[in-house]
Length: 217
Image (cartoon, rainbow, N blue to C red; front, side, top):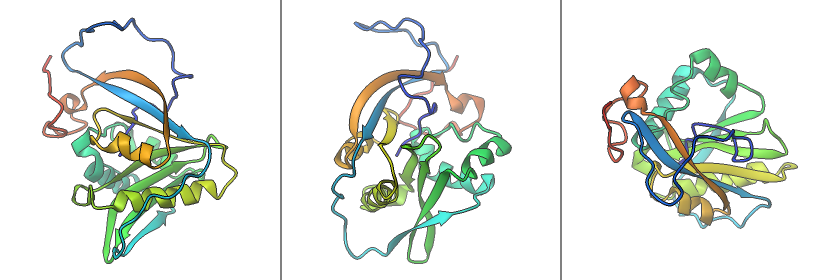
């Protein structure tokens, strides 16, 4: 799973305030801090082993609407404080997800749909971003992620791509970083990100991401 609140890379981000690199840095109440790890690959890796017997498939959504997207985004990411797309207006969100260079896929199993989200962003081609990736809570740890990342690599490396990249953060599922590394991504940088707690502004409900404490201003 991944929800980078900023699509930028370490090379394009402006310098920020001083951070104590050998100790603690005070965080104001109402803020949330996370360590963001940037990963990338430059060639198609070997596929991850998949579990057999599951009738899994990916379906591309050619004209996603904001209401549908928000519902899926929330179902997958609320436990991990996914908030960036929930902060956008419907118009701003649909400008992104209906862009011809942004491909949205949903995971289906038998008669069940909207079980996972795979979003590939080709707007910086030949660099491609794995913008969002995750499954609903019922499928976490069930092998669906391996199926999806293998299909993602097939889709990306069938084209003239030089770099496939993603970033994840320490607010995410504890297995997320290890999963991306097993899938062929290599860590290249880390940054500390500080944002307003989206649960205090109402972007997410207060019960979202209970593993992350709310520090009331």
